[in-house]
Image (tube, rainbow, N blue to C red; front, side, top):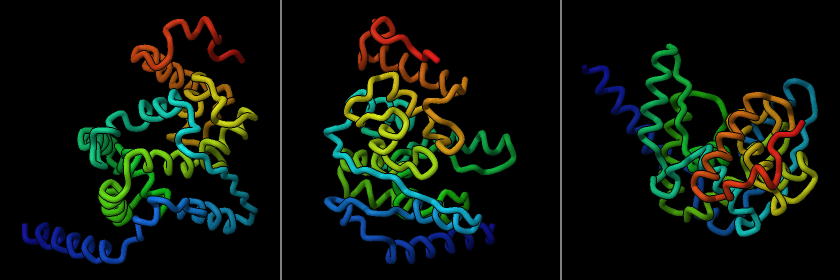
Length: 239
């Protein structure tokens, strides 16, 4: 019992020290980050492997991104985004229960704000210390930046493939057009790869991506985001 108590005291002190030295979140209100910690991490890994790494990113304001794409991202990645304060504790609880069953800790259940914190200032490495830092930054982001700005930042920095960062670069790379012209099907397929963008491609023939994109589209139709007759307008998943 004493060891557990001392461990939590240690974590609290560590968190306080990091809080004092954590990044200047206020700059994100108006300033668009040029390069994220996640990008730098990918560059380091590529350099160690002896290969070059090109980053492609094109910044786009939130009001240019189609509403159906934004809603597809929320459905797939963080359905409680507008109501939570940075953490979805129910999702975290479920993720921990799954981790316990598997006998390992993957730290799942991340919200969009947590993913943004990780992308901007941390790395994809899974470790307890990184998760503590992520929680502190997430807490600060939610209290300093508006929800719309959080979404804008996320859509512009999240990884969408090898060296592809942000929705505009992803849209032009995979569909050869600006994100403002993406239709619901293309949006759903782009969103479907977000859990593992280095493994999957939205334009590939993965059954997993096809099923995940179809599920996202079904929810969008059910919620009235796109019309029920959408499949009659644009046939889905023609390979």
